[in-house]
Length: 108
Image 1 (cartoon, helix red, strand yellow):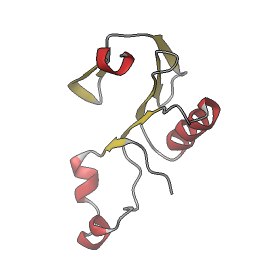
Image 2 (tube, rainbow, N blue to C red; image 1 turned 120 degrees about the vertical axis):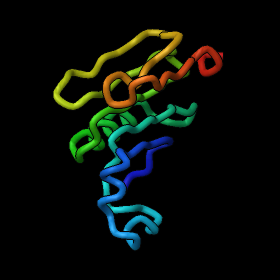
Image 3 (cartoon, rainbow, N blue to C red; image 1 turned 120 degrees about the horizontal axis):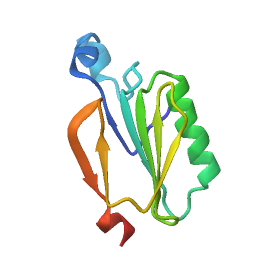
Image 4 (spheres, helix red, strand yellow; image 1 turned 135 degrees about the vertical axis):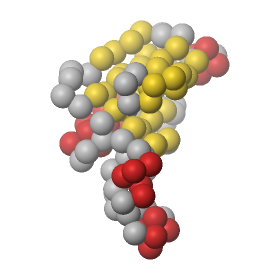
């Protein structure tokens, strides 16, 4: 079991679970989108392996945000990991159209 810093599940997929499954602390479903925010105590390689584990288990899209290196790794099913250096804004692309995250406060 894994627990990302933030996650999102397509409503139809969530609704396909039973009411009992929806009440579990950890529901038996992989999110569609995950976010990991690296803290000063996190090892980058460990977080990268965690992101790959998410993708291997059905996550479609994910961000690994690294404030120490001011970079974002973007994980997307069927594509190589994209690395952005100090972007001001990242978007949910096709999975979450219109969703954007401004990173100026994260970069501090």
